[in-house]
Length: 116
Image 1 (cartoon, rainbow, N blue to C red):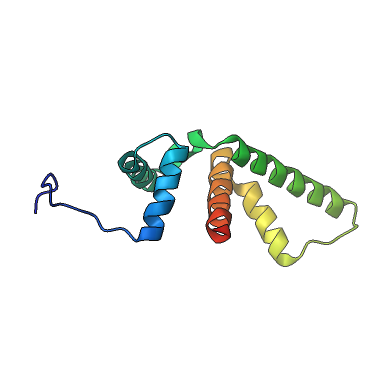
Image 2: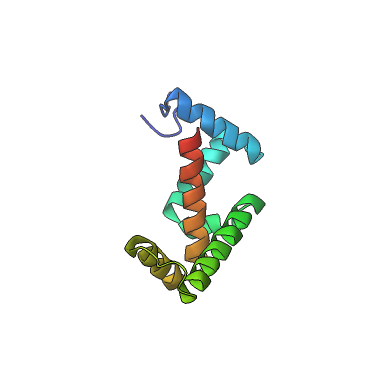
């Protein structure tokens, strides 16, 4: 069956289709365009960075402020970081800005997925 054959269909679970349709509406795209964009993003995650919305930027700022506050608190000796927290802080410090924004976008996506 050729890809341009009218019988060519991709099967998608109903719940996934519903979520894709909602995302398409939010992004003012057709369902097809939404799927094509998401597949393209999976091959080039850096392309997602330019589409972070204000909520994601706000989340990034809040996380950055929390990390800085935690570090300041640790410097004052009021609270020692657990080994896991220290590992996350070190990982965060080693990331460049693009990597940090992508990590936050992925975390937000995971939180949104778990909330639905």
